[in-house]
Each structure stands twice: as C-alpha cells, then as structure tokens.
Image (cartoon, rainbow, N blue to C red):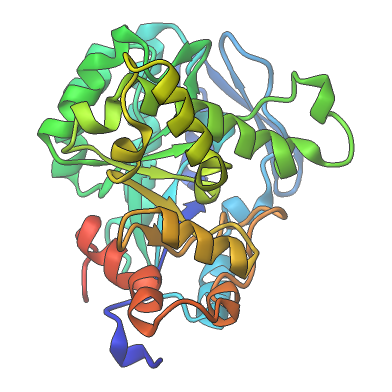
Length: 332
C-alpha cells in the first residue's frame, strides 16, 4: 500500500504544550496558575485548587523534535490536544474559563499556520453551559474538535448537568476526544507502572460503559466521540455489556451506541487492532501515537503492517482517510 492510496497520514492522538503557555504563566499573567522551573527545560504547573502537576516532559514543548519524529515515522499531520494534567477542572468557574482560553490561544499560536498540526480545544467543563457556548466558537477559530477527560473532577460524563455540552456538540456535529485524566490515587495501580499500563484504559472503559448505558452516543448522534487507547477494554466486554442490557432493559443498547464511536489505534498488538476493527463500526479506527509519552506507540504504523487480517482499504482508513473526513483535515 503506497502513499497514493491515502490522503495524508494523520496521527489523531498526540499531546502538546505550547512554550507560550509556559511563558505566560511564568509572567504571572494567568490568574490562578503558576509555573515553577526545576531545570533548564523542566517546569511544573500549579493550578489553584489542585496539587502541582508532574514535571512537564520537555518533548511536550519541543516542536522541532516532534516534527523530526513525524518525518521519521511518515506522519503528515498530528492532531494535538493539551496534556491531561492541565485540564484544570478544579479551578473556580471564572478562572476555569480564562484558563481554557489561555490553553486555546497559545495552542493556536503553534498550530494555526503550520501544515504539521491540527488542534483540539480545551473547555471549562466544570461550567457546562460555558463549555457548550464555546464549542461553536472554537470550531470557528480553526480547531477540529475538543478534548475532555473521562471525568470532570468527580462528575461522570453521563451526569445530567453535562447535557448542554452534549447537545451543543451534537448540534455542531463536533468531534470530542475523550482522554483519561491523570490520577494516581488508586493504590492497586501504584506499582509496576500500572497507572499507565492498566489504570488509564480501565478509566476509559468505565467512562465509556456509563456513556453507553446512558445512551449518550445514540441520543446525541451528531457528536463525533473518539476514544483514546482503543476504547480500553470495550471491544472485549461488549458482549458482557450486551448481556447487562438484557438484564436491565431500561438501559440503552451498548451495541447501537458503539456504532457511533471512533477509536485510536494505540493498542500495540496487531490481533487486538484487528479485533477492534471487527467490533467497531466501519472506518471507525484511526492512527494514534500518544506522543510523546513513554507508554505511547513510538512507531505507530508498524502495528498496521503486522495486522495481516486488515485489508488495504481498512489500513488506508486507519492511516488517514477516516481522520481526514471526520475532522475535515486540511489537504495542503
């Protein structure tokens, strides 16, 4: 399969922190946010109402290293969202909106004039009405969608107070990339690197199971819901969720809901990728890397090359066709 068989190779799961955001916070111009420098290129953010973030990985800022990596991997476009540590859902409402605007403004400074990137906007999800109001605004500014965490603090994504967000998303036919927020409060995943290896996919699985049970994907069909890390365990427990639906018929049908979902390819195993493609809707899986984190897939196209059960058409969809159509990726 050659490059001519696809539009552009698109990595739909990557993270970026603009150096402009760091500098603004260092200058004291962002209310409720401080940055502390620990080394030449090491920083941590302190957002009001929450603990300090982990040290900011330098590759999150370094666009030169990122673009060299993209060239090496044959990736034309990255769809970038903020670092999960910076969602800022613990900020007071008035500061949350300002913070989201700073995140978005600095992200556009990096991405809007570059052929290498498309960007996902951040929203003040603890203020659902404001988050809903911002969706058409950020799309007009050039974002290809929005990114949110699997939980908004302690609020689940199926909570009634988030209905305005889902309505606005569906009305705008906008994409939302759902990514686990950072949490290290489960002692069962405190060892062996299990926060990343297990904790995050489990977090996605629970959030997604709740969305399916509540019927969010079917009630808001215009929302283009994209799940990180292959949707967690969803492909493997879909039958079990179906059985639960038979026992509790007041729930929504998870199989119907799954047909509205999209997934990244960050599963590492070719058999798992093939199974995900079989369980998802046609053209519902897209290339992802989780750049630049160690748990990410640093050679994301290789899992496709090893997935021998996938047809050339399916591989082309994963590499770029689906993302280009779904997110209206620029073709030049």
